[in-house]
Length: 335
Ligand SMILES: *Cc1c(COP(=O)(O)O)cnc(C)c1O
Ligand code: SF4
Picture (cartoon, rainbow, N blue to C red):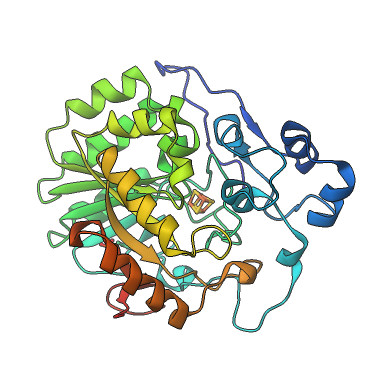
């Protein structure tokens, strides 16, 4: 993904720019995990230039050294299977390019709009449905006024979703400004932030962010992205729990070799609840090029959901969903 305006800030900001604190080369990741070079070669013959490795140190610290099957490692490590061409797996899996008005806004569904605040993320998830997305020219960067005008001119929009990329890669001051402008639109009743950062890099939930988040005049929701209970270690759990004054939801992606077993999904829901998060969606993989090896087929997903639903209270069972280009809402899958 292009660097965009990640972790940078205007000169007046109260928060200093964050250093690039993550690992961005496979060799460094292997070294950090003590993987021998030969075993490493078999996994990833080369760094992936198109969608490079990116993993914050806090994330890497949760990977079990020496375990090639570690679910957190699998989510960030480029592997040879990514270069496989699989029919049906394309560059724009969910029709975002068609839905975009070209102004950083995705207005696919009624009453809510999604703002592509930035193309940057703190972590690069190998299965990401936007791994090929041409963010440059499609984000909100430089078009904030136009986006606010678009929303202000449409009274039926009652919810604004900040997404990306990851909105929390923005410096606090920038994000505060954006949110405060949206709050000022009378018909905007709720603001939602889709982010993986509290889990990927818990230190991002800093004191300034927390203080601001407690003072909001309108309801906010934070929709996290957590796929495996091991992502919510003590630090991440604390960062998430510190946001309990907002409505906290989780969307996960069903990923082969990461969370495609009922035990893991049950533990994920329970662990989320411990830190104040309710499950929202469990997404079937979007069929994006390079991610085919993560796919769990629909029949297997339904079987899993039946077992999960049999073991959890209803409020801890996520909705099994699939994104269908052109549909009026996420497609919910019965099981
Ligand atoms: C997923 C999505 C939303 C939000 O859908 P909900 O079902 O309300 O979570 C909104 N806009 C776009 C473009 C989306 O992809
Ligand atoms: S954090 Fe979200 S947008 Fe960023 S790479 Fe991961 S799945 Fe994609």
